[in-house]
Image (cartoon, rainbow, N blue to C red; front, side):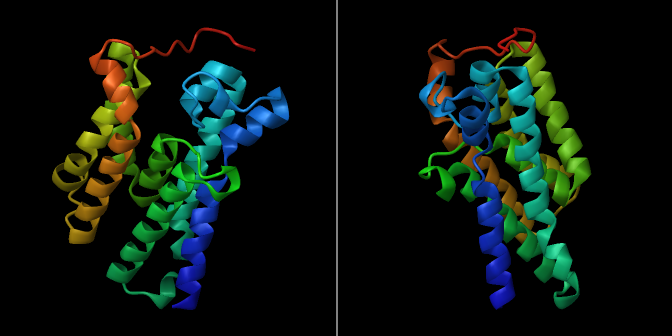
Length: 208
């Protein structure tokens, strides 16, 4: 029991690594939370700090999710299959909470999209590939990262249950909660989208 709690806390700390904030301060002398959309995520990093920093933050944030989701596998022999799944989902959710509310950055973090992708990769690469495909289609059509994230979040529970057949009750609850968390974190983006005020992403534009 104690080691499980320690792993969950460690997953939260992994999620709490404020990649965008530390990258901005170390390499650019600024905090991305004070510029652009004022969010400590990969999208705002691309806009404010440029492509090199943006890709770095994106990759690290995805890696955080992968690590948190597979962390319980280190002690998998201590759990049944169902218990291990619950443990993985718990560490995964702890990581997302850490990313959105990071202890290392005054609890003001990102929206959890990249880290969620990492978690899905760790849990089921097929679900991750389909979800990424949905995101890319929406993004390439409309050039809104937020819209891609919202649509993907709404579709993920259906992808998991109907396509990949992840029908464990705990998995259903997790996919719905994860999607809900991502959508809630994008509530301001939803308002801007509805008002036609959301910024499009142009990856060909150079910052650095």
